[in-house]
Image (cartoon, rainbow, N blue to C red; front, side):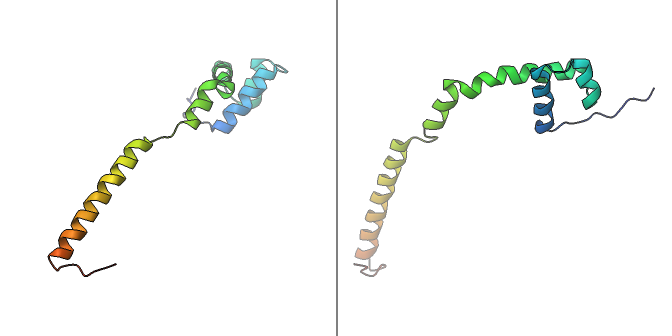
Length: 103
């Protein structure tokens, strides 16, 4: 008997099969025949779906969205530092005659 090549299923297909398993209208064997997937694989996808469902309604998901990805205080400090450097260089170059009066 020849082995079938390894298949990669899309997340949409996995969720469709897992939701069908959660509904419980058909047995795992019936779903396996219908979707041409091994029953153990369907059980794994169903378990992953049920474990991940907690994260959809959990507090961890909301907390991650509200926090900024970067530290704003650090960025403001860097802006101030660069402004000082630009002012210093502008004055030095104007004094040296290399920069015309802009203002």
